Image (cartoon, rainbow, N blue to C red; front, side, top):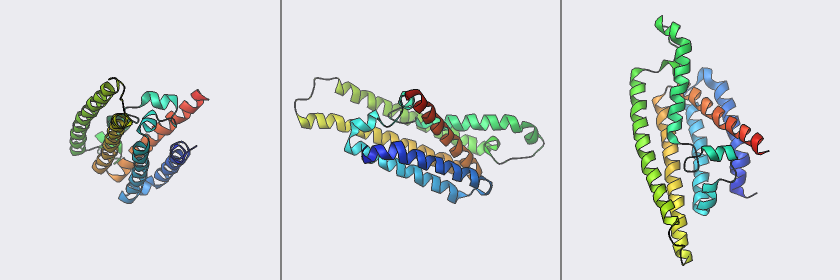
Length: 216
């Protein structure tokens, strides 16, 4: 197993579980420092992904370290950025429904079920921008795929140029994933951000565990 595969099959899942434990234990006293530590971990993951994409774009895109289930859910070799916002709305809706009686009485929880009108407006604006950029990246990916379907390159340089475009699309997608994550947690209060990050970790860990069971 090479160093990149080790990062994605062993190191990252272990770090994600550790992060989830830290977020859960620190939720009651959540502050920006806790949220920033989580962001720093995701940044290190995407840096490793970027390095892998530069070294071997095709392999990074194929993601052999992922399970079949994870790859089936991939959008440009990873989670769709807008999926994080969908997860936020889903978590917020579930919590809002469970807290509705208290909210009507003026008792606020301060968690994801208690988003302000200003926060919702900013999240909606972010979602619109994110979807627009997803469409641009999807169009760029389609152009790369069409280029790969053209007559096979006659030289190594031509092939390298085509493969290099795959890496650039993947890096752009990863940049959007990380930027969306940063902007979402910036909109949220620390406790809200922690709840979202835990939900995202639960989803990623759960999908991997189910995928491993299926592949095994």
